[in-house]
Image (cartoon, rainbow, N blue to C red):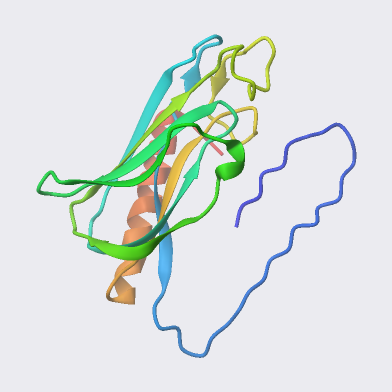
Length: 189
């Protein structure tokens, strides 16, 4: 679990709660994998800054849902699966991003994606004065960061595997790639 807080200049009370439910025998388990980027360098006034991220599946998965994540400069987010035969399947398309839409979108009918499928995410950011959600007036240079005034590109994919033991190497692979990509981009936190 991760919660982002933004300074508001006064004391505040956190009313977050977590509920944990246990079952005797889970019928299946699932995990989040993701595609992410850390190279944001959005100049002030740039209304059409584009960034992409991808992740290639090292094993077959059952796709259950998608969770897109950007901050206030986000304008568009699109994720698709590119199967090994070149076939594309749209996973989510948000042509008019809203910061409050960072939610868990579940597929009514989960579907399998084979090993070697590439999950591609494309995002567009608007750092212009015309963006009503821009937290800086006048606009300032924006890079990757965890503050709401910074920017992010994550797209989480909620997946399961036929054999629950296959989830461990899958999650280990995505976490290793995250570590490597953060190091390449000079992100230390």
